[in-house]
Amino acid sequence: MSWDYGIENGTYSTNIATFEMFKLNPDLKLAISKCGFEQPTKVQEECIPKVCSGIDLLCEARNGIGKTMVYMVASLQALPSEKEGVSTIVICPTRELALQVGEQFKRVCQFLPEVKTQTFFGGLPISRDETILLENTPDIVIGTPGRLFELVKTRKLNLHQIKHFIIDECDEIFNNVSTRCTVQQIFVATPQEKQVMMFSATIPGETRLVCKKFMNEPFDFCIEDDIKSSLRGLEQYYISTEHSRKTRALLEYIGYWKFDQALIFVANSKKCDVLAHVLNKLDYYTVSIHKGMSQTERMDRYKGFIDAKKRILVTTNLFGRGMNNHRIDLVINYDIPQTVITYLHRVTRIRHFGDKAHVLSLVGSEKDATLLTQVQQEFDIDITEMARKSSISKRNMTSNGGNIPTTLASEEDDTNRQRSILWAEETMNTLCSELENINF
Image 1 (cartoon, one colour):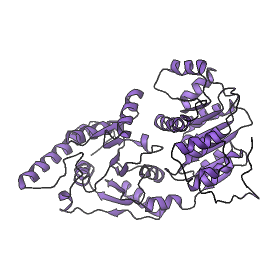
Image 2 (cartoon, helix red, strand yellow):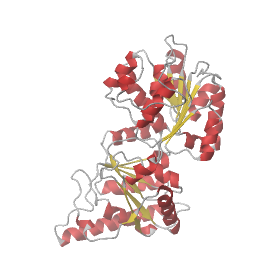
Image 3 (cartoon, rainbow, N blue to C red):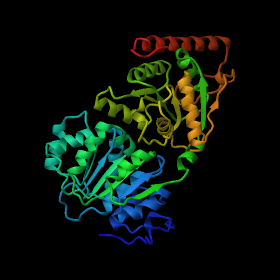
Image 4 (cartoon, one colour):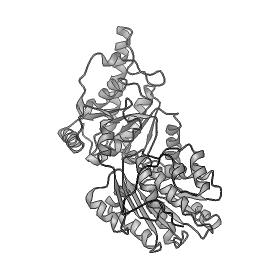
């Protein structure tokens, strides 16, 4: 069924105050209400009427403002009454994002018991996925490109009834030539007549052209200055230091702010494990996650962080996209990213925009400094140098994690603290210096 959403002459009047005012089927409307969603965000207000009318969508908007809900509503609203197979496919670049999207679907679909969803990704036996598709075919499939293509290639995943073809974080998907080819092969296995929707916080010009080749006269949505405004809501700082003294700088400053949960980004998997080891030895509740781990281990560690059993997550760019956690209010770039876009995706993991959320970057080279200069110019923001102050080490930390730095009560405490920092610095440098292509 196609709904009339008051779209006239290519425009849409944005006067919707609640989800109740969308012309959704009663069961879906009730499910959204039971999940606690009341007032649509701007991206939802603008895009849901378009996609529910069957229009293709290319959506560029910052993280954390409800892009997932747009394609969830579109796919659930148009779900065929007579099930004929998989009607919606959602492609995500990482397992963690696929899991997160799958959980969001399940949250709504718990109130729509007739709707079946499944998430497929690598790292687990493909036989499990094949059995699910054979014995309990889902209506909605979410997954990563590689695993989905394997299932399509072996004809275990039938896409002949697809009505909605969705790509989340489309710029990351299409920036990788191999992944782009895989997605193209999945695309051609679907019917010619279908709705295509693609989403990301950043869609560069060339990528936008690639996306539109998959679409038919899409609604091209982009919130003007949305990214800039979100970055301006963060207090962003940098520290100039030598590579060999990054760990010392991190420990001296991590207690400067009171934070709920923090993300620390490093350059590679080995650094992930080493830095997490150091922080745990100093009584910070820390976990590391990277692509070198088994899928089961990654899932267990990810759940521990999401459930707030761990306070700090050390990771690579694996978590630079997609992960949403309302508790994260501190992001630290232990290693500066290589591109402006990666910086943007890292720091917008923070959900507390404008609410005492902080970003700290450790600058260890001219290349690092150049990247931060480019970030400031690109987004018209200020990243302030944080000078070393003796008062910083005397700041109080929150009570639930970490004892370096802490409030100094005596000269003996100060000496012990310095010993701990020296041990951490030497441990990190010794272990990391063994890695190839890492020079301190």
